[in-house]
Image (cartoon, rainbow, N blue to C red):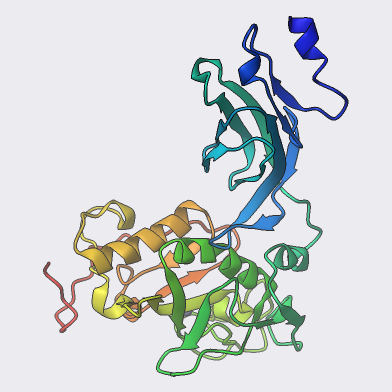
Length: 328
Ligand SMILES: [Zn+2]
């Protein structure tokens, strides 16, 4: 019997169920092979990189197909698309409806698409851009046509969304990646306080001793000088609810930024977003209102080489006496 059923597996056949003595549960999933590598070259529902395979079920019974992301009941001859959002091995379990004891599993390998440079990565995220004008401090200037991976940006106080946005290519990639942490929470609008500003940290114009690697003077170049940092003032969801860093972020005391207790829905969403971005290693530096009074009304996130932190500075938690003090 094994031999006879084995004949069903013709060339191109991929995974098939050979259940001894139970012809009613024979099935083949055509188009996907055990061990197949699947490139992450598509965009998922929330703008995340995703790898998909298309398969057709050949069987005479319904079959349940389960992955970490999907759970489908598939009809005979139905074509399905199976998508995965994480690199590495991913399993697909196939379970004949009339023979659940005989589930089979195969594994596919999700792989990163090789890119030569930052611009290739922008293309992977389907970001619409042009190379930008040469600008002091900026290595790879781009002008992005907005929205960026489904997220619209508005300069603080302005009622109009940006049509285009000038920045370094690496920042554009980071914003493209960050879209997932926003869109998966129904956030489609960001209010920003700007990207490019050729200046020192804390203000001041860089003098002639400044190069991309630093200054001999007391000026330390801000990541804004490289157009590799952005200040974010608020987020707005599809229903129009606004989450303001200034009004809704509750300053953490004691525990780290991402270990705080639940202090209301708006504070929670803001913490969830920035902590997930940190977890996903989108930014090298994340400064929140915890950091100092100058950051009470925004997050500063940037791509400073060699840095990796979100936590507060080492001094005692900053306290605020203003109307922004929250107690809930
Ligand atoms: Zn900033």
